[in-house]
Length: 458
Image (cartoon, rainbow, N blue to C red; front, top):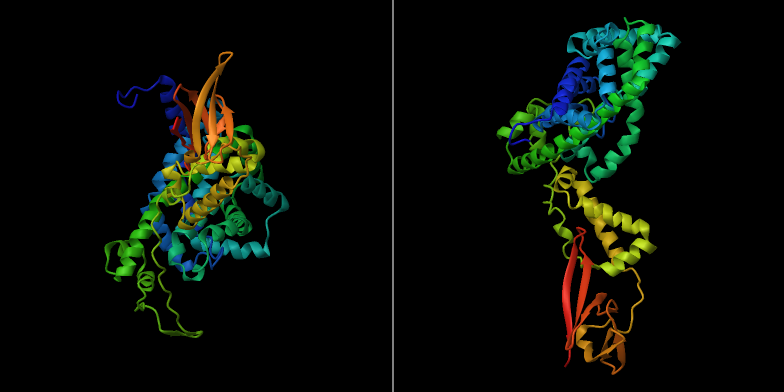
């Protein structure tokens, strides 16, 4: 279809319908809207993201094509969850008088032109708080909407983008920092979003706001919200893949020591640029009222990823043992399946932060080692092949058996399917002068490896 340019009529209709929905609802500009809203959220966690770093983080995300990835993944999410009924209901709402009024108010509320008015409103709300009915309906809108979770996703992406350059977090692991922040930033972001929405809706009636909350809480509204959240989150992950590449390039430039380099000049503000290369910022005093100014140091380069090859040295696990693990240790088996799939996905591995990747490698290594230590009863014939000797073949009642002698001069009879050898091989075929043994095992990627061995007459 891609080569011929052909497209089923149904797909064309879906794309056209979603195009209208994106235009009416503002989804085409969602990333820039969330970016503008986040700029008003100061000091969510000054240690995880310094106020001076937000501009640098914004530039990194833009360099990582954040807006493009968000648009592409929003379209992908809405196509995947497409519903003609919900799409039409959503378009009807956003194209209504109330819908247009609310979208316009939300857009104007985050405009830099209204900064003074926002400050004035913030001061006034302390003396004249909103009515209980207005506050309750705005809380419903915030809870059912996407702004708070989208701001959270972008904020955590900023933290990740700045992590190599944030001296306050050196010595900590990014995966743990982000893990803690996921819960800690929810309330401060929600509180600021509520203030932001109260400002945006200050001239909109409570009745209209209740209509908006009703839409968000309807089946069509929930479909719209969940599709947006899914697309926005996935778009952030895709953008961070590019950001990680830019981080590495920046760290190389920093190690080589020059703020005159193109990428550093393009992305880092002047003051931040000088701090990154461990030179004194000429625009910053050496002393302040609090004492001498401390300079931050650039962290070392991240180690290169081998995309799972770090685990190649771990021996494959016999398929016979894997079957026992699946039966007796289902949780361990589930983890092996999960990480096997993960390490087969180059895209997912590249999308991880350095700490997440390192944690995944070490966790999977521990899982594989734990699986390899699984105790499985062994028979007297599970010896090295040099200790096994074929001494005869007999047939009885259409059944063929092979006579095997071990190094301690003990004899055994084996038939097709019996386990033999050090790696849980099974007898596949008994011939007149030899027996064929098949060994099957699973490697760290989940691939089934097959090897044939033979035991012959001496």
